[in-house]
Amino acid sequence: MKLTFNGAAREVTGSCYLLEAAGEKILIDCGMFQGEKELTSLNYKEFNFDPKKISYLILTHAHIDHSGLIPKLAKYGFQGKIIATPPTVDLAEIMLEDAATVNQDETIHENKRRLRMGLPPRKPLFTMDDVKAALRLFYPVGYDKQFSLTKKISIMFRDAGHILGSAIVEIAVNEGGESKKLVFSGDLGQGSTPLLNDPQLIENADFVIIESTYGDRVHEKPESREGLLSGAVQDTFNRGGKLMIPSFAIERTQELLFYLHRLERDGKLKENVYLDSPLAIEATRVFNDHASYFPPRVKQEFQNPFTFKRLKFLKTQEESQTMNDYPNPCVIIAGNGMCTAGRIRYHLKNHLWDARNTLLFVGFQAVGTTGRFILEGSKLVKMMGIEVAVKAEVRKIEGFSSHADSNGLIRWISGFRNKPKKVFIVHGEEPSSIAFGEKLKGLGFRTYIPRLNECIELG
Image (cartoon, rainbow, N blue to C red; front, top):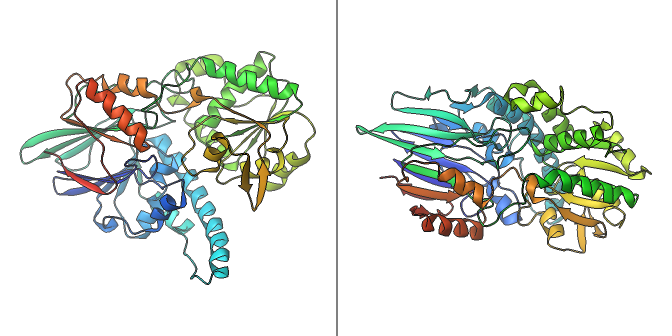
């Protein structure tokens, strides 16, 4: 049995692991690399395996850094089955269709640059036809249900509490008369979030592959995020400004809407909230379709948590542009979460230079992204061909992270009754993975931090 780490090894994005066991080749995730150009260029390289020989793809959740290269996989011959939870199947559809559109637009822009430099044009990573071909391969499987891939390999999804439908994956393999169990954490949620259950604990495993996005730090207390959001709203409105929130379309946006709904209900929100993201609007519809996955407390509080008087949807580009000259204080939630694409760039171009405004980060900012540059104190950022001064107040609320922090990760892995033979630490920038590894060693775990494309025999 072998495991190859084709992404998210000593960095956060590009999750993709190849398991070779009992005569089968199985992928766990097939994500897109995001961040600096050196990293994103990996998306255009050939896979480190033959897609035609992959029997199954197990998708932990719909985020693009876990699902984004699935259409490319189909493009190059993958015809196996893609197993995911029902919400992930629906969310992946809208995410991958959006990714195809974004990639097509970026390719047009890139080829204009390449033409000026005398370079040959670049083909898109994949097309909408490739997305449609991939979507035909999806097969939904719910939580806590054993699903047999073959006579010798079975899987079970557990609730990871990261986004709607996110899964921890248990893989049981019988090979050579010996049974072994692998557990892939996927991305683990931090718990105590309104729309999600806490990550399920797993009792036994021979090998664990665990994320470490925040393996070197501790978030603010979850209870503080609503108060911090309220404070950002009130402070910005008191200055007569706009509160801009770059937000991921899935989970983060819906959680923000939930808290803003509460603020309106409690009389603390007296200006409009604009959701300026067709993808987030569509994702919110999917959330409503799968409301049975919410904890019961959600329905006890709101019949529909994502609908309230002050909330306005901006679906078209023309509607979005009306915010350029909007005279009143407001909240603008727009994608994407790292400010590298999407409509948030237009709002930053038009409002980042105004000291009355606030830019509020509520999620992880990868190295090389515009969000990371701003968060690290850049006074000027390039935005759509021009340089824009950063004079708006910049804030960050760590408590909104959909990833478990160091304490949450340790709490989850401590749930195993017997320590696994080895714990592989992935999906974290190198300092974070190393720091988390040292903490686990101190608790008696045998750990290893793989490198990109490293193949390891699981004995």
